[in-house]
Length: 92
Image 1 (cartoon, rainbow, N blue to C red):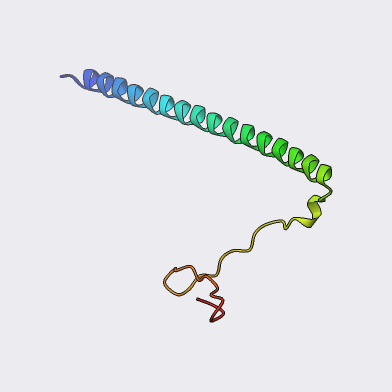
Image 2 (image 1 turned 90 degrees about the vertical axis):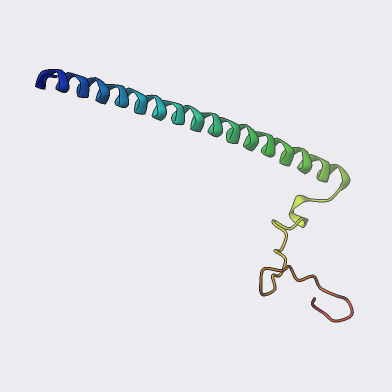
């Protein structure tokens, strides 16, 4: 094989690899767009559910401000075990 033939073969291989990389990048970008679209949809649904809960709370006379922003995290014991308060001893 001549030097030019080797050069041309290597150039074709490089071009093929580059196109493959571009396809992978495009597929990853499409996957991320799909994920972002799903996240956006879920965010919209969550906001709509929050508004519905606000209306329900108003209908029964319980303002949403009386609901805690987030539940307290359970206490964790050494070793990653969850500690549950025991009425007879205070903590588990």
